[in-house]
Image 1 (cartoon, rainbow, N blue to C red):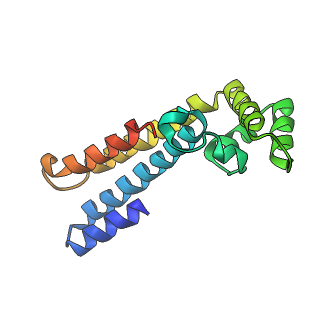
Image 2 (cartoon, one colour):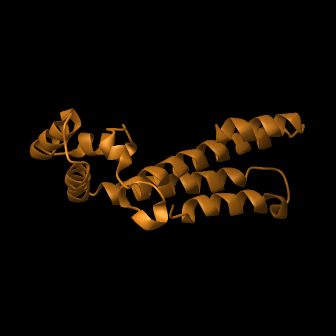
Image 3 (cartoon, rainbow, N blue to C red):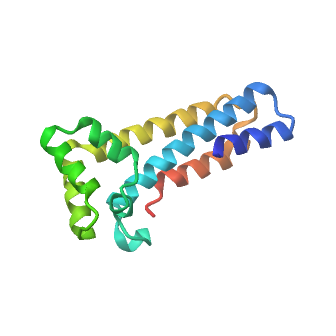
Length: 153
């Protein structure tokens, strides 16, 4: 969505094709980085700062990068536990969040997701270099992307 929005704006403004493509790539990469950050915050954010229930994605079995990667990397015992929690209809929400988060921690999902998130943000900043305008005109996009990286809610 972010990539298309930037691409469309560039096309309407008559920006050259290479810069339009770079803006699209910037938007896609920053958008993916944002989603990874959002998924991380859902599990690991400070409840008071976050403003919504931590672990909501776990409770609702949302197929986030964290869950899918955990299922991919889990050993047999961890995989069985994850599937048991996913398949349960009647459960204590806090217990489920704690149990699934513990499995994520055993596997190193937080660190893996942070690395992947940083990879996408770095790709986004690299794409921004391909936009054929002076650096000061890119500053707003850089500030916006940095805000997405630094946010804690």
